Image 1: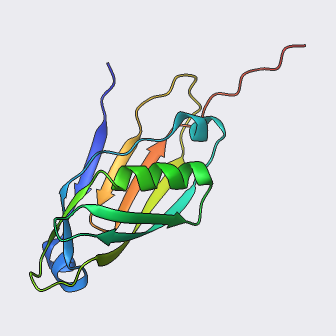
Image 2: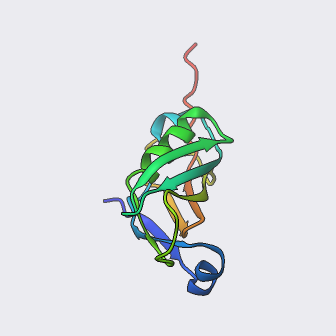
Length: 137
């Protein structure tokens, strides 16, 4: 049975000083199997528009392969944010990064990724690279 490792780092003093949002609900992201098989890595920079009820209205990603951008955009649209300031103007704009990384030994199977959350700014998804199958002669 696989276990998913999630590390959550939240610093209230940093959030209060730098961001008007916090995360109320999160769906843990995954490393898309096709992206892992293609050994795709990279940082997706997201620009979000968040409505008054904390729902993500718009998520626009850039800076990485389209498969990684699509996964980050789809995942963050499932999140719900809260607000530290009641007087915020909506939609509220927020930026965050999803970092997709392959490291460690090659694995034939697709183990669950290690996910580190540095909220509300960064999500790090790390998985093992796929095993290279020998070519038939």
